[in-house]
Figure (cartoon, helix red, strand yellow):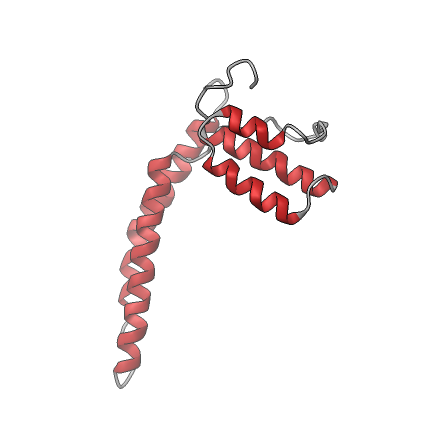
Length: 138
């Protein structure tokens, strides 16, 4: 990453830096407080230089046997946003149902179950997108 230090960091670059910091904690090179600080900075980093700075003082790590090379983010950002919207809508529905059921004399029919259809569609789209991104030769 040093040859082009002003290149903008990708989500995969940030994940790789976070993985590197986790390995440093496992090795005892970082304590949890410093790890927490650096991981927060890693996910806020804009350039690869910023990520390099967070791991520059760590000893090199040997690749573990059987560990595959890091893959790009398996799920596109728009799908992550879709899951966030779906999760928020489902949570609001469940909370609304609980409040309405508490106020009613008896429990109401669980109407938030209607969120399962869109969630299933989102799950299928996510699995297909992840498999396409991880397919060899892409």
